[in-house]
Image 1 (cartoon, rainbow, N blue to C red):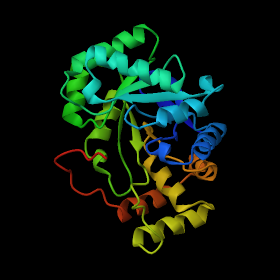
Image 2 (image 1 turned 90 degrees about the vertical axis):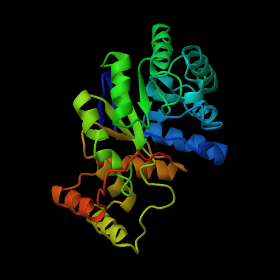
Image 3 (image 1 turned 30 degrees about the vertical axis):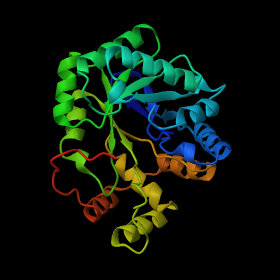
Length: 279
């Protein structure tokens, strides 16, 4: 699995990781097996959040005995993101995950607590060794500017955002901002939400055609397209060990510039929205 520098973090991270939103809805042993299969295949970046129900418990079971392999990420809810609330929420996540540290801790989206308070909580957690880095999620450019100012610049590891073929809004301004400031972009829901283009749609037929040329699947082609920029990572959720293997194999897929251009044309960027989409 290819690894890339993750913003200012002094560690390279697998470009394809594993998301866990709704993973607690799945059959528990199957969910654990899928995460472990992903680890076996190099998808060592595992993302979760306190908001995701029992997902942290599932992750904790999956990584037992393998913690040092994992780049482990969780997120604090904005309603908990006061200075003391951030520390308390992280400690609760650590307990559910059965670990003593997070590799990265994110503010899930911007809320009413001042960013300075949240970042002071992050700083305290880092001083205690409970987190090794921190970042944000669902931040548009004005939010990123405010975070950069509040932080003093240079500490934001990543911005985790919605990004799939049908929703490319981050390419207008968020991706350029992150590239300029050395911040990693992490794509969540990279296959959309039950709306991945099927084989009977024009875009779906194109993905199938390109996939056939590489002995791959349409989903692997779509995932690799999203990862064409060097600072972008993706965290698809796997519902089974076989699905995890399919996602991991996208890491070795190499699309030509002509193929990338055809996909770009088939799934146009569209106009810049007034607000950054999130789901």
